[in-house]
Image 1 (cartoon, rainbow, N blue to C red):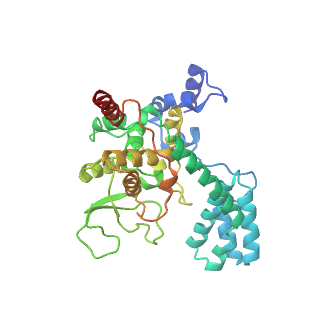
Image 2 (cartoon, rainbow, N blue to C red):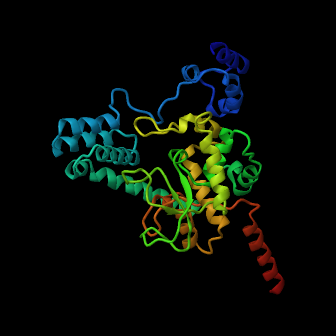
Image 3 (tube, rainbow, N blue to C red):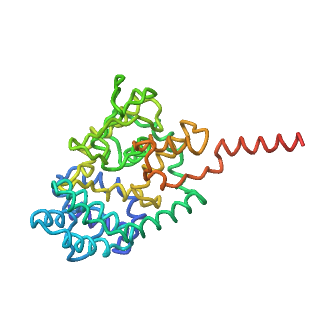
Length: 351
């Protein structure tokens, strides 16, 4: 094990200053070298750590929530704890996310309504909303330019070449995550199934295939109500084959996709693959949603926004985060742009 690591470092002249984008080029090579080693040894050489940075000396949100419940703190005490937690974040958006996570952890532990309400710090929420609103305006004005590697046609071409008889690579995993607009936490549990007509409020007669097992669900079962299936891959059976292909490989190749005791999926290995493209795993779902809206040919902005929500398994009609994703700009070779140019030339001739 140590020899493998040392050889790689010497051969490629790696130092602590070597950028992630360069390291990412050797992911598959080092994986092959370590393939015969046991899992425990590999994790010693390349330790898997939870995502995100935490200030030295600060308890985890999970531990803070446990302390609140165990000690039955008063609302005033909880509010002070929440203020310290949110204010110590690098920015109000991160602070709001911490407080949201704290409420979720309290809910998981059966905390009462007053305890959860005491975690709300209005000025942090207000500032975070202002920042998000400014970002939304900027995204609407300028759009988003994703790496060429993840434009619609290249992703489709790579998916067409996938061989289900072979184990998927991390690159295959990334493309399937884009195709199904998945968070890393969705991969292990997402299900795509056909449903019969139902009187349930979630049922939409326009759809017969639905998704369950998505990560953001408030139900105790963790399954969530069925949400209509919509993705880059129009054929739900084919889409399910891709999903099953990836899920079957989790025990052998993608163990990092399993949630830890805190319910967190480690995304470091995915981000290492994506580093050379300058993005992280939280962008994949956004790219996939935009691709799905293009493939399903939304006729106007409202329709395209609805398609993006469906692709992300969000409730249509509710103000959801997909509105803050920003829209991918058309590449220069986009057919839509070509058609627009052709129409302009025709108009010139007519004039």
